[in-house]
Image 1 (cartoon, rainbow, N blue to C red):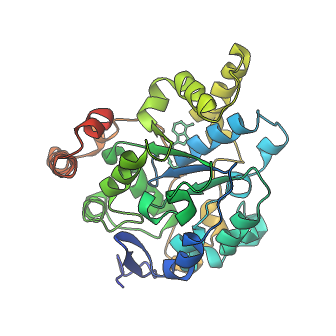
Image 2 (image 1 turned 180 degrees about the vertical axis):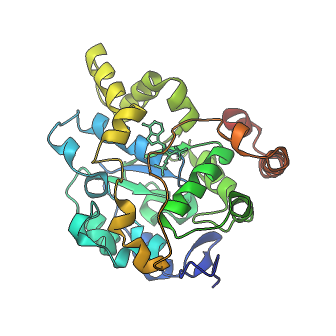
Amino acid sequence: SLSISPEVPIRYMNYHGMFVPDSYQLIADSIENFQIRDDDVWVCSFPKAGTTWTQEMVWNIGNNFDPNMAKTPLPIKFPFVEFTGTTTTGWISLNKADSIFPDHMSKSVEYAANLPSPRFLKTHLPFNLLPRQLRTREKKSKMIYVARNPKDVCISYYHHYKLLEGYCSTFENFSKLFLGDKVYYAPFWDHVISYWDNKENNDILFLTYEGMKKDLSSVIKQTAAFLNKSPMSPEQLCRLKEHLSFDSMKKNPAANYENAAESINASKIFGENFKAEGVFIRKGEYGQWKSFMSPELIERFDEWTKLKLENHRDLFDKMI
Ligand code: A3P
């Protein structure tokens, strides 16, 4: 068990190759034995790959845009299954008064297990640590994975850590944690590869953040077909695209995690001097690394990627 910096009172471990808080052990068995249903829809990702955006898209496609339910916050209608495991002390001291996070956040697995069908579920677990029934395709459930260029993920993750994880060091130091597999759910490439290698056998729809940015209409249509939905009218498609635009999502209180830092009582966990910085729906671009990273760091990332994808030329071509 180790700590990433003196300010952060959370201890981490390597759980079967995945970097997570120690407390993951408390829920690992219930994740492994989690009961899957035929009509489950899962959104899986490495953090900061565009999970929230994909969830909002999938939920609306899956629910034919139900306008009443659309106002229900994502953490309630599309919960993060292993939430307890990743945030330990933080989320346990929830500040309920203005929280968008419901009580269930301290019992995320149980909450997900008891949701009525059809369930929409989010996870950041790598493929090999998914619930057994999901890995072995015991049910006809659907899985959608979203991947994003690691340089942009790293930048987004750095801002996330400053907002929600008590991180107060530099980007340079954060990038060392990222490349050294010392951030939640690392190692990054093993995560992406685990889904990439299993996508055919397990009927996983593999999306990319960049693909969604470049041609959201196509991704919406592809996802709707994957979920066996009948094709949308041009008006419906237009309305959904507008709903999923960066500006709309940023304003959408059901999806923008506004007040997330206050909700988790960040100063209580990380000390009075900690001030959460930034917002969750932050910039929404790809290729940010070109102006954000030094040439040396870009080179380090490129070498690391080349090495990790040595045997995955097809994935390299898709993502880099
Ligand atoms: P940035 O920090 O680069 O802006 P996740 O949901 O996996 O945590 O990913 C968060 C990232 O997705 C953030 O990236 C956020 O801004 C971006 N994002 C969220 N909604 C988006 C949208 N509608 N369009 C583009 N990017 C979006």
